[in-house]
Length: 75
Image 1 (cartoon, rainbow, N blue to C red):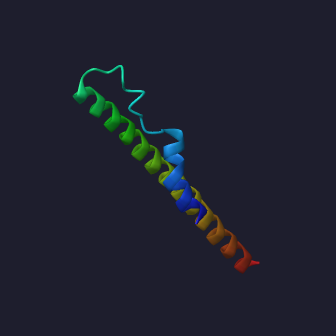
Image 2: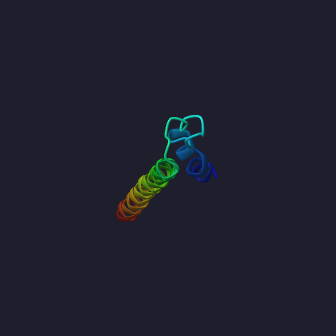
Image 3: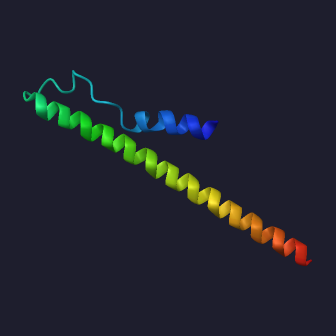
């Protein structure tokens, strides 16, 4: 549950969406859309990085548990 909430909210905290006030100085509408799209791409990339790290931790834990159980069976 906590991991799911982290994946939902942490990227927005790290890379908050650009507001209209932040983009007021940009005159070109296409450029504003590109900036917003780039920020969204950063959010998505951060989310995938978190999923990868969590997967590595879970995989390492599973292999460690498997090795521990094999060692315990031999004793």
